[in-house]
Structure formats: C-alpha cells, structure tokens
Length: 282
Length: 282
Image (cartoon, rainbow over all chains, first blue to last red):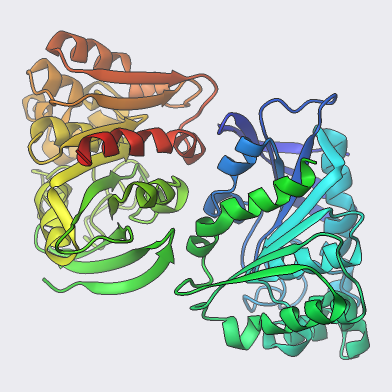
C-alpha cells in the first residue's frame, strides 16, 4: 500500500506526519495524519487513539485545535486522525450543504445511490485505516482506542459499541448520541442509508445500547451546557438512559458555560488522554 | 471606545473573546482577541501577554495553534492577540504577496505612500491596543509582556527593546532578528519606510541592541534547527552577537529537527508562559 508523505513535523518530542494514500474502500485518494511519540519502535509499538472530527472538518482539525499532541507525547500514545468523508467523489450535490456529503461522511458505509460508490467511511475507519497505519508505523493494534467530537463522537461511540474487541477504549466530546432522532442524523441516514429506519439502528449509539451492544470499559463523554446544538442535535440524556438500562458504565460530564467549539475540547482533552492511557497502557 | 463582541467561548476555566473596534491609529475596523483567566477583577487585575503572529496570520492564529491558553489559565495570566496588519485599507497591490501588505504589517508605522494612510501597526500595538484592552478588561498594564512568532517575533523584540517600561517581559519563537539584512525585511522596510536605511534601524532588533537599546530582563528565544527560513530570513546568530556586545541577557535555544510551524511553537509554549509568569507575577 503506497503512502505519500505530504509533510512531517517534529512536535513535543515526537513526529507528526500528514499523509495520503489510494484508499481501496473509498476508491479515492484519502488523507490521514499520524503522531508518533518518541521511543516507539517495532519492538515496542505504541498504543494508539484514532481521532474522528465533526462536520466540515478534515484530518487536520482535531490535531490543530484540540491540543491532544502534548498529552499523547507525555503518555507515549500515538494518534491517528482520519478525514471526515471521501474527497473528490463528485457525487451530485455533495458540496451543497455543510451537514451532508463532503465533510459529513458520518463514519458509515452508504448503501444508496449515488453515495454508495465512495461514501464508505465505515469500512475505512473500522478496517482500512487501522490496517494501513499498523502496517506502516510501530503501532500496537491490540491497544487501539477511539475518540471523537460531535459527528466524530457519534462515530467513536458506534464503532466502539459494535466492535469492542477492535476499539479497547472510547470517549467523546459533544457526540450525536441518537442520530436517528435528530435532524443531522435523519438527513444523513435518509441520504446514505435510505428511508428504512431498521437500517439505521447499527449507526446509532443509543439504539446499539438498547440492543445490548455494550463496551467493557467506561465510556467518557464531555458535554458543554452552553452548546448551541445541545437540545436540537445532541440530546445526551438518551445516551444516559440507554447506558443505565444496558448496564453500560458511562461518565457523562456536563460543563456549565462551555459551547460546541474546540475551545471546549482543549479545556478537557487532558482528561480524555488520561482516560485512554489508563486502559491502553495496562 | 466602542468594542463589538464577535464571539466568546469558555476555555480552560476562563473566557476567550473575539472582538472588533474602530481603530484610531489604523483608521479602519480592527480585530483582536482577549483571553481572561478565571478570577481576574478590577480589584485584582491580571498580568497580560500580547501575542504577535507571523506573516499571513490573523488575531486567531496564535490562539488556535500555539496551545498557550491552557498555561495562561494555569498561571492566571491574560492574553491579548492582535491582527497582523490593517484590513480593508484597499492599498494598490496589498493582496499581491504573502510577505507584504495585508497580513504582513511588520508591527511598524509606514511612512511611504500609499501605506502610511493605514499601515500603522506600530502605534496600534504599542499604544492603542494596550489602552483599549486595559480600559475594557481587568488587566494590569504595569505587568504587560509581549511574545511573537517569526514576523511577530521581530515585533515583540523591537517593541520591547524600544520601550522596556511598557513591555516588562519578552520572548520569541523563530523571530526575524535582523530584518534589514534579509529579504523579508528588506522588501517590507523598502515599501513601508522607503529606501533610506537609516529609517530602518528602529525596527531591527539587532540594530537596536547595537545602539544599546537593551531590556532589563532575560530575552527568551526558541529556534528550530530544521526551520526552512533559518538561513535566509532568520539568522539568529546576529541576535546572539549583538546581545553579547550589548550585555543583554539572552537565552537562545536551538532545537534539532524542529521547523517554523506552530507544531514547533506548541512544543515549547509552556516554557514561554513560565518565563513571562516568573517576571509578571512578581
């Protein structure tokens, strides 16, 4: 698998690189980023956290704005950041709105035309990107976690609940916890998956928990109380209720005054790295 | 003085705000940002560090990319970030290159037409922005420091060396230390100040030190050895030589493998906040 290095930068004692590669699952060139902490090697591969960003973002956003690298370096944990959608699919209308199409892949495999041809971020995140990065960097695939923000928080939760063996730790900032019931999710799922709501359940953290898909570790979620999307799109109480009913350990913290931005994320990012490190560094 | 609030965000226990105001010195609307740590009040105003960014940047760049807010909050220090040039001056050719005109104000007052009308970032940074922010936020003007990157490192050094009573602490990342002798500076100074090099000396940290303008505190400078602009534009050895001759205390650290980016800055930003805090929190 050919990887093109777009740039590399020394950062916090490690190396941050931006790359692209021809993606089999997307059928397009895809971009990603990897932060390798100092000291990782084939003999001592690093645990890794995959970062999933929100609507309109790219593989750069979480790394630039969340301040995660400092703590990853401190804990000896690698970071892998994916783009949020295919690029260059040229699907009709894919650039018409911020919450559907390019920049809004929702980390799922579309089944509906014209999206099914390239919008396959589900397979990309679950299989192709872990395999690609673990074949090319000294990463320990047995100690792999996942974290995301907003649409990426949705992605982190559903991927971890569906495949707890693949994702050993999970956390989210301001996730879309019940996309089937809110406008962002209804628009995306109708477009990518079609109108039959039975097909949506595997892509909805609340519905997965209700179907007894749980994760063996505690899920950490942070949510700002001044988040402009709290009531209309995020509705974290659904996750709390479903976790309680399923016996899922969940720490959901509400932070008065904090909004949906990365200024919120950077305020609490250290706690998330600490949460993942406690699991992945065992 | 009327300030328009563009947005505010809770961050790291304090408040980060983005603002605009009609600037007297620029004759245009200008943008700036302020981070106020928790606990500052009129009775207990916070020390403050002004942040000057480099070519092509805005008042947002340093705050988004440098990871300074976390440590400012920890130390109880406020941050003020300025834009790097006037906006909307409509001077002929101001958008033609990345290193002159918009985004490239060099923190000086232009004397040459057509730039002299609005390109007055020297007065803006030295006088108007401190006065404006200290009249409207609980900031302690007697404990005011300055820090910058690249063109902003040049700005921090020359402003502090010219007015050590105004700027009580100073540091820089990868500064243009001798602009009179390098292409970026020669282009900017010729355009803004005219061809007479005698007029350039007050805007050149190396020449200021040679003229015995010193700062009573230690100047902290970090420089990456893999900086793509090191030899052609930055040439930190001029600063070392001039500081030694002038008796200026200087800590200039070279970091193997680090480049000119904010990935470099965020790797060492904590040391800069600690440096300023040791002086400003006395």
